[in-house]
Image (cartoon, rainbow, N blue to C red; front, side):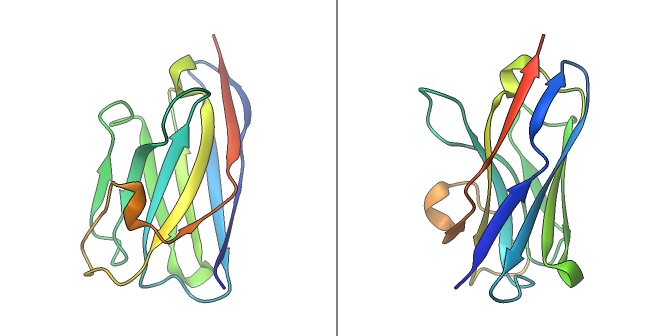
Length: 127
């Protein structure tokens, strides 16, 4: 059974930075595409960033492009989301997810493509 646990959320001022971590256990996720999603109160869960299992392909939502970076460390079974120049509209609960059985360079942006989800970590950006 795969388990994902996010950490690193908290309260940050607008313009600041935050680094979210996602620790996987149960099996290696070296061959899973990884993604970060977020959900604000009253809104649907939305794609933020994704990385292929090969690590050579990434995709970002337009709203975070140039500010956020998704990373993975296969040896540590970890994924990360580096958040820079955060804005109040980035306030949400952030979830990491894993999508197995995909070609090496594929990044998926839809929630239905991901089989495993963490419980989320809250990020609040103050203005």
